[in-house]
Image 1: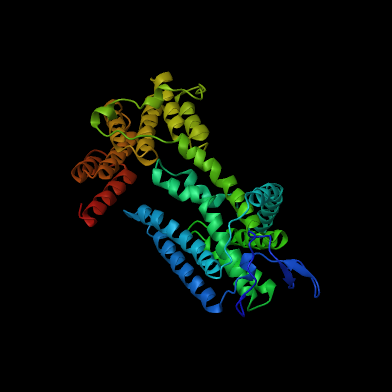
Image 2 (image 1 turned 45 degrees about the vertical axis):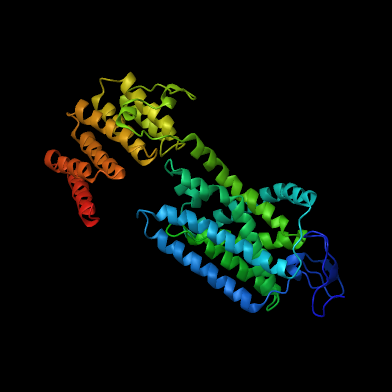
Length: 430
C-alpha cells in the first residue's frame, strides 16, 4: 500500500507520467490538467533549495577569484578539476533526491531522440531572438559586440590538451547538469514557495550570474543568458520533460563550442622534447593543406599571414607559421619583413603551440641572421627569455633578459619588458 504523503510512483520515464490538477505556466486555468514529469512531482524542500544555492555560490566565488589570478602557475589545473566537480554537484543533487523518493527512471531512447529533433528548429528561433536582443542592447548601451564573444578567449587558446576538459563538457555534461539543477531542481523547488513567474525570473537570474565570466562578461551578456534561462523554462513547460531543455541547451552550446573544438584539433602540435628535435621543422611543415597566396612584397606577405591565418584571421597557428616562412622564402632581400616574420614564428611557437625549445631556436635565428634589425632582435630576445622560463631554465631566462638590457637598452619598450621580467624572476625566487 502506498505510504501516506508519498506521491504515486510511475514506472514510465520522465515526461510520461500521470496527470493531476495544477496551474501551468502556459496559462492552464482551474479545472484543467497538465502532465507532470518526475522533477515537478518531487517534494523539494526550502532548506535543500537554499543549501544548493549556497554551494553553487561557493563554486562561483572560487572561479571569480581564479579569474583575477590569471597567469599564476597551476591555475589551469585547478580550474580543470573544479569544473567537473561543480557539474557533478549540480547533477547529483537533484538525481539523488529523486532517487531517494523512488521517482528516478531510465528515459526512453525514442523520447530523447524526439526532443533533440524538436530542438533543431527551436534553436534557429532562439538564435534569431538572441541576435535581435544583442542588437537592441548594443544600440542602447552604445557598445560594439561579437556574437559568441564570451568564447573569444578560447579562440586564442594555445595548444593545451587540458582545455578539451573545459570545452567538451560545454555541450555534453554541462547542459545536462545545468538543466537538472536550474530547471529540474531550482525552478520546481521555487514554484512550491512562490508564484511561478517569480520562480522563472529567479532561476533565470541565478543561471545568468553563474555564467558571468569575469573579466570578459558584460551586462549585455548577462541579459542574453537571462533570456536563455527563461526560454529553457518555457521549453520545459511546453514539452513536459527535462530532455527538451537539455537538448536545446546542448545544441546551443555545440553551435559555439564545436568550431572552437575543431580549431583546437587543427592547432594540435607536439612540442620538441630535445634540442635536436627543436632544430628540425615539425612534420606538419611538409604538409600543405591550404596553399599560401603570394603577395606583392615581403611586408604585404607578413601582414597577409597575420590577417588571414593569425590572430586577426582564422587563428590557425600552424598555417600562420607556414605563411610566415613564405615571407623569408619569397622575399629574402626584405630583411625587415623577414626578421619580423621569423620573430613572429618564435612567438607563435612559444605562446600558441607551447613549444619553448623551437621558440628559442627561432629567436636565435633572428639574433644571428638579422643583427641590423634591432627591434625584431630585442623582441626575439624577450621571447627567448620567456621560453627559457617556460622550460624552468631560470638562469637562461636571466641571461636573455640581461642581453636585452645590455644590447637593446635604447629601445624603451624592450628595456621596460626586460626589467619587469627580471623583477618577476626575483619575486618568484626562481
